[in-house]
Length: 297
Length: 123
Image (cartoon, rainbow over the protein chains, first blue to last red):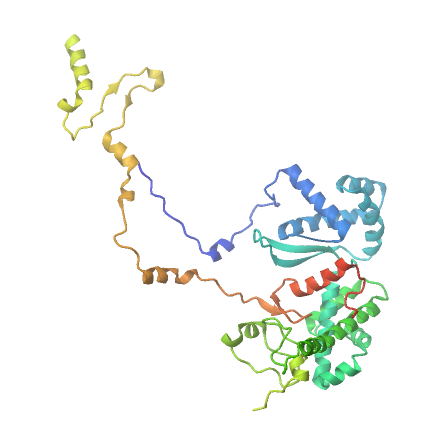
């Protein structure tokens, strides 16, 4: 009469090793028509804004469809126009598709979109991603690669010169560095980190001639920004009229200033983690430049 | 015939006097037409009790679980540390591996919203 169900307990590892055999596509808990309209909306928004934030599975499906529509845009004939205008939900996006995107991606054989993972959404803990069209004017990889190149060039310069001298003279010759790094083969050692160099080479591959000068301008701007930060922090500190420059202000837990070789996990644990001394070389912080230097034991 | 019928009816009307407790009290056979399934047996008291109060539900904790034992059971339920943390190559702040740096993104997004073209000009 009575049935006692045996409880089945799965650990998180066991739940995460689920397979995908025989599953063709994502359904998104929607009917076919709803799903198709949702994806068409997402693709139309992507073409309109060239960078959108959505959940990761939706971004993956949207990327697949968007690249197919861009292929139609590259074809450009009457049937492609008919099919694209039937798919997209805003007519103002069509001239962009057949004009801007077709010329931008003329040389590129596919891969017109890029997905950046961006943590989890607070409301429902859904994994979120930023989906963008490659080489758009707000290209995220371009910006972050420029920042990475700037920081690495600055770290290299800090090994040779004092921070205050570097701030006074400035950092020049970024264009030469970028051009020489661009010509380096894969696997060879240079000034930049291998990952940064690879990203830079990818960014510059399908762009036009003035991309290198544009990148060097961005890199120079960011190096100025980095060098100005301890100065502005010192001015802020002076304005508040504190007696001594104490602590590493303007750095978050786990953040490292240019020149510091310690890892995130060591820094973020603070006093509870392993106490490693900072590098012997100069570090670009207000404390190092203006404060009392630590005694060498 | 009539005495048989009377005896059966007496069984139904005065079950307490006729049947001992061990025997099911309501074991009356009601004749039903065959298309409804033939005879229908009413549920006995013991089986009814088994349905309402199954034996597993009669189990009960003997003592309040002590604070110490409760805490020991909760030892594995703590939050796990994240180890996939790296430095952002752009700004040096901590970020999840293979994810965008939120510091860098916030900085850039604010500039784009304000409408400036160059993202790192010192104004």
